[in-house]
Image (tube, rainbow, N blue to C red; front, side, top):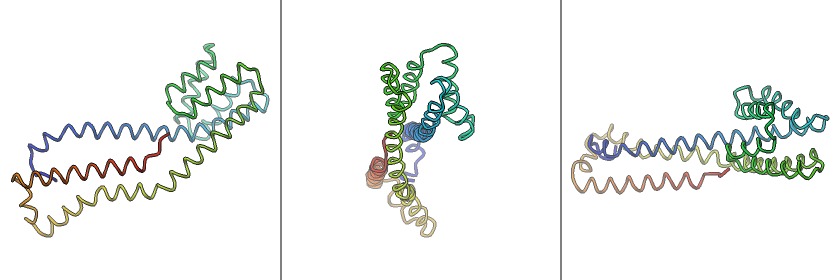
Length: 216
């Protein structure tokens, strides 16, 4: 689109690897967002089990069934809880299991939960009450993040449209006025100008993504 050159396409093709890397990172962030929402529901199910008189291990088993019914057996939270239950059956310390989960997930809310659980378990305090207060705090934080995400959802859609507008304009003019852009290709001036425009486009694309990004 910018150079109309097979050689330029070959030289710029490594950029595709960077793009794919960014897309993988975005998918990972999306999975984190899903996990955070599911994690909030898991905490409420866990607390309900504790308040019903279950031991902490049985409360996790109870929460697993709830998450399977709510999100399905292939959901991120369901698979994690199934893994936790397997570890508990193998007599692995629950504190260590939660710490390992926090390390894998790299989600601040799960890390905070694991830390609070470790302190509450060792202090011998009111575990259901402590976890309930923690769940409320984490739930409020998650809700704020969701509200922000909802408010900027339209802006993200606008960004996606604006990313495509320059290409749409070029294609439209090429189709309606053939040869209009010929002077911008195949000569040093055109190559320099189009390179500058490509740089401006990429800078605007990255800036827009950074502005609209919500860190989890």
